Amino acid sequence: MDGGEGMATAAAIRPACLWCDTAFEPRKAGSPQRFCNSKHREAFHSAGRRYAERAVLSGLLTAADLRNSPAEACTLRTGQGRAPDYPGIASDENALSAAHRASVQKVQLELSIAPDGVLDLCRLGWLDPDTMQDLGAVGDAVAELTNAALSLRLRPSI
Image (cartoon, rainbow, N blue to C red; front, side, top):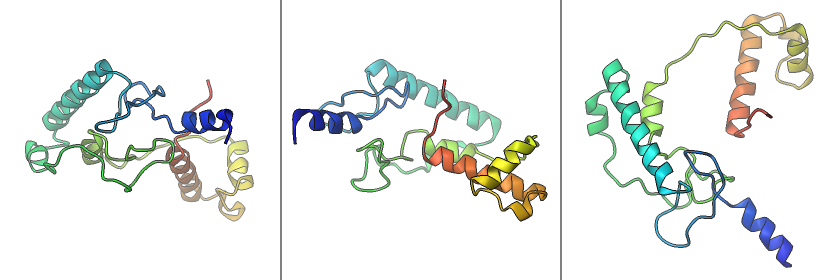
C-alpha cells in the first residue's frame, strides 16, 4: 500500500463530533472519543441535562425512568451496533438515545406532494404505480424513503 492509499483509509475512518458533526482525529488511547474538544463534550452533557429536565417536567419521561435506567458506564460494547461511518462509536448508544426514544411519539402528518413527486416515487421504486392514488400507500412510500435516508445519514445539499 502506498502513502496515498493509507491516508485515504485513515481519512475514511475519522469519527465526527456528536455536537458539531465535524470530523476529528481521535486520541490514540483511552475511552472512545466522541467529541472534537472538551467544550463540545460539556455543551452536549449540559444540553442533555436540560433536555431530560424538560422531558420530566412535560411528562414524557419520569424521574423513575432516569433512576431505573442502566447503571453501567457509557462505554461502548465492542463489535455491537457500530455505524460504518463512525468506527468505534455505536450508532444508538449516545447519552441521549434512551431519553430520545422515550420522548418520541408517533406523528401524524398532512403533507402535499406534487404530482411529479408521486411519479418520481413510482419511477424510483418506492411506490407501486397501481397504488399511486392510495393516500396511505403514498404516505407509506414517503415514510420508507425518509427512514432509508435517515439510516444512510443523508444530509440536504447546501
